[in-house]
Image 1 (cartoon, rainbow, N blue to C red):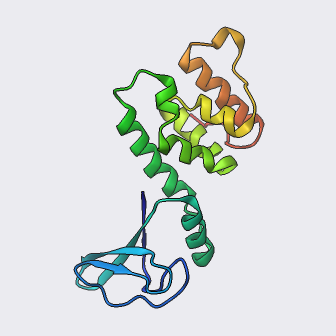
Image 2: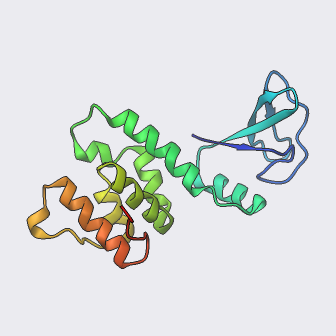
Length: 167
């Protein structure tokens, strides 16, 4: 599930008016999207919607004309890292539902993954290969995670997914 905060009282999926919240929750009467009410202070009330699939997220993006990919990526990445931190099997790590959800983002995920590789050497190599169909890792770098990450970062710069770092 991915949670995104919205500042409207219309359903972000179908546009229907949402009823008054009962016990901090609201369900759209038309499409049954579920929301939680988050009260920030006495003047500011937000609704949060939990996305359990990309289709719902894309519908919300279209309605609000905004891209939620980065928020979705960060939440799925956090869940993936937390739930796989004790695993040693790369197969189990890369088959985790959150990792697979990131792959489903397609090319929109590439700059986000590459930026993450710059900061941390998380095992994004399978996802990048799956999304791009490419394998820029030099033979002599196989097995050396930092070098593998740098090969992908160079590929991302060359293919205009990210800019060269100024530092």
